[in-house]
Length: 322
Ligand SMILES: Nc1ncnc2c1ncn2[C@@H]1O[C@H](COP(=O)(O)OP(=O)(O)OP(=O)(O)O)[C@@H](O)[C@H]1O
Ligand SMILES: [Mg+2]
Image (tube, rainbow, N blue to C red; front, top):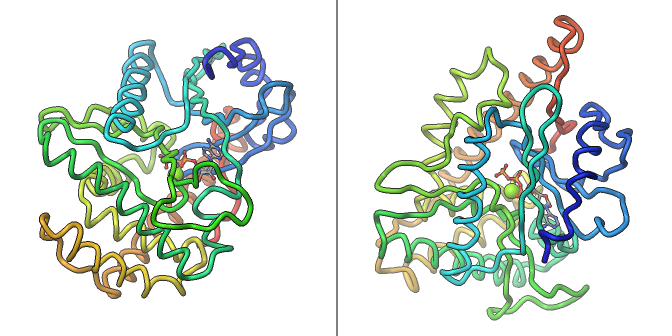
C-alpha cells in the first residue's frame, strides 16, 4: 500500500527544510517532475521514496479544511475508478509547519516520465497521436455519460494531454485503440452535489497575490471551474493545449478526430463541431490569463521577500513556454 510507504516524519523534515525559491537546494533534496498552474510535483531523493510522486499544496488554514479536502480527494479517486477510469494508487498526508498555511502532500504512484501524454506526443507519429487522442476522448466519455445518468452528482475533469499516461508503458510500445490510460490529475477533485461545487474554490485563491484575488476570482472561478463539466469545452481545452505543448501541427487532425467522434460514437449528446477559429481564440485567451497570473505571482514574491521582508511559501516555475 502506498499509504504505508509515506514517511510522515520525512515529509515534516522535508517541509521544514524546503527552500521554495531553490527547491533543489532544500535540506532534503528533491527533484521537481512537474509544474501545474497551482502546485508543484516532486520526488524526494530518499531511499524508498523514489517511486512516489508528491504534489505539494500549502494552502490550508484549518484542520476542517484539510479534512474536507482529503475526503473529496478520496471520493474523486474512487468515483473515477468506479466508472472505469484508471487512476494511480494515491494517498495524502498532512504537514503542519510552525507558522503559515498547513500543507497537504498528495502522494501518487510515480509513473515513467516518458509515459505521460505531453512526453508521448513529442515522439509519436501523427496516427499514433490520433489513436492516443481517441483513447482520451473515450475516457472522457465515461465521465460525461456517468454525469448524464446521475445529474445530481457530476464530476468535472481536466482532459489536458499532460494529465494522461500510458499504462504499462515500455519504450516503443505502439498506441492502439486498446491502449489503456491512467488519469493522474486527481488533485483538484471537482464534484458537484445538487449543483454545489464541493471543492471550496477559495482554497485555490490562497496562492494568488492578494492584489489579484478579485481578478482571479472573476476569471478562474467563473470560467475555469465550470469548463470541466462540459464535454465540448474540455475537448477544446485539450486540443488548444497542443499549442502550449509546442505541437500545433497536430491540431487540424485533432479537430477532425474530435468532430468525427462527436458525430459518431458521441452523437447522442448532440455536441456541435469544434472549429479551428475557436481553438485559436481560446488558446490566446487562456495563455494570456496564465502568463499574466504567473507574472503577478512573481511580483508578489518580490514584494514579500524584498520589500515586506516576509517569507514566500510557494514554488513558482521559471518561464513556461507557451
Ligand atoms: N504520478 C505521477 N508520476 C509521474 N509524473 C507525474 C505524476 N503526477 C504528476 N506528474 C507530473 O506532473 C505534472 C503535473 O501533475 P498534475 O497534472 O497532477 O498536476 P497539475 O497540473 O498541477 O494539476 P492542477 O492544474 O489541477 O493543479 C504531470 O503532467 C506529470 O508530468
Ligand atoms: Mg495537470
